[in-house]
Amino acid sequence: MDMFILMVIVFILGYTAIAFEHPLKVNKAASALLTGVLTWVILVLACTKILTLGPDHNGFSPSWHHYLESTDYQDFLKNNPDSNMFEIMRYFISHHELYHHLAEISRILFFLLGAMTIVEIVDQYQGFRIITDKIKTTNKVKLLWILSFLTFFMSAALDNLTTTIVMIALLRKLIANQKTRWLFASLVVLAANAGGAWSPIGDVTTIMLWIGGQVTTINIITMVIIPSLITMIIPLILLSFTLKGNVERPEINEKHSKEFTTHSERKLMLILGVSALLFVPVFKTITYLDPYMGMLLGLGTLWVVTEIIHRNKTGKDKRRLSVVGILTKVDVPTVFFFLGILTAVSSLATGGQLQLLAGYLDEKLGNIYTINLAIGLISAIVDNVPLVAGAMGMYPTMTPEIIKALPVAEQAYAHFFVQDGQFWEFLAYCTGTGGSILIIGSAAGVAAMGMERIDFIWYIKRISLLALIGYLAGAGAYYLQMQIFG
Image (cartoon, rainbow, N blue to C red; front, side, top):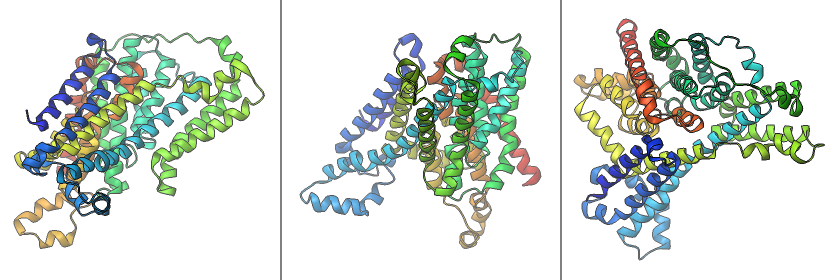
């Protein structure tokens, strides 16, 4: 069997195991890790097959030819003068490609781990009670609208992953019933992804397009905010007709709360925690360092503050509220789940499957709206980052000089790819919101699924159709908007 196809089969089987986690009684983190490792093992074993067919077979890693021109390749030949092409390709996959993807994955994992720990610190200090005590309503519909709009705008200021982690922590203080909390958490994911799509710092893909120069801050906000808002509002309206009754709030142990934390400590931790999260995009803008560095800076600050506050305490009291003790409560399986999923997808990026898919869409569809709609739907299955990276590689950003040099027949189509062109705007919308169609289709969804143990099949039955309707409605709104104002 072609190793190229075998990788896809293993990925599909792993994806199926994740989807049927509850019937199989196998934790999705285990399935994800196995899938991620096995796809890379198959890719390395496929070196011999790739050599017989040529490294361009099936769109094999686009960075292969760049590697052959790099100093890394020259250094390898100096240190291994007798190496053959098989050894060179194996080294390229195991050291160059795997390390490259590991760096990208690590950025997300450290960011996730830092954000989860900060939220857990605030939660352990009962800091979120200051917010939840202000939300008096228990009506399901009112509460859903309040939390969704709060998530939508928080996601634009922070990012969809951080916002989801914070909102899940809030939901645990507001809703006792697990299935009801699943519903609210799912709408939080939808709202977080919608809110992240119109902000240059709200989602990894919009950050990529912003840094890459494909979009600018003011334009992405003004052109994508209305479609994103409609993506969230349509499912909310549909749910409002069927959602009845009130939520039951969990019981809070007042004695426990007063025994270990004071009101001033709760307020301090809430302010420091929220400030640390809000400071991340500011940190990135000032230093140009990756956002996870800003997140770790915030975590380190909170860690020092908690140590100072409890420096005179000993034993269980100090451990309960120290970061060392709080770290034992952080959801590590969710981190491993992220690692497995992102590792599996990165192997498909190196193997060329995603590049081949992007080329197929371009060849068969050939329209910026249908291409982006398809990419958005695909991003519900695989991570949107390599899809956007593939699109950025396939379609260079056009300039007036480049367009003038093109044949007249091609100039109108090329205008879609200038900075702030319709292709890039619609790509940001589609990849940002399309992942909501499946719970595993976005970083926010994966985080919510891991933290709340949301069942994959339950999400498909209850949320996927709503998310799809909202996605198409928002896309229609963008198209209509361009016809009127474009």
